[in-house]
Length: 263
Image 1 (tube, rainbow, N blue to C red):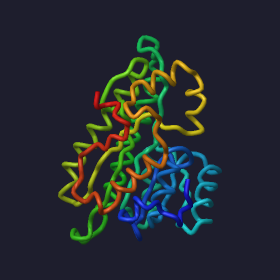
Image 2: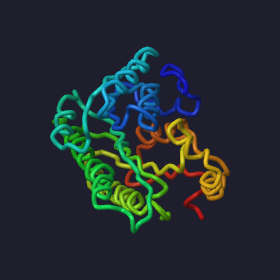
Image 3: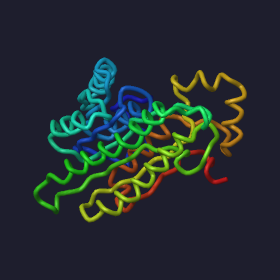
């Protein structure tokens, strides 16, 4: 991944200079990539997760390359911690609502404990984070100066179904519904709300799964472009939707899936 000082050519029209951004689940994977991309595009980025060591390392990486970043330890499933975290921000212009999880298993084997765990993280926490972000964006006293952009990180599974992923599909469909409703409700305040729905992305964390030939074949056979997604491809979508280049887009889902959901 390129350093914060070297914005990819395709993103140079999507600057977010001077804006304050918060990214949840920012210690690794897609959240970290999104934070780096926003820093590359000029934002002051606040990185949120439960693990301080990961956050500090990520923030140091961004700062070492000239970006502005702060680590903000917070468990997004804890409403009090979420409210306190947003209260510490000077202001908020961009939210990347990324924290989430998945526990694939057969529908009839899902326990109440695992059901509640994924619902709590993927739906309840996403709602609380979006709510706290909206309140922060609305704190600006001059209505003419209000505004912002929220990007909910959904999934292609928020548009289709898949065996073994009933809970995950349910939560991501819920997130897509929240995106549409917030896009309508917050539009009068110039707050845009969109989602990004990626396909399977190739990362160090997902690499072990794709070492299993049957699973890799199952995935690639369903992506018309015939390959896995890359983090930079999702990051480009994040920066675009967060930037003024997407000023007329709200309540929408940008599907970054190589054609999976077009079938």
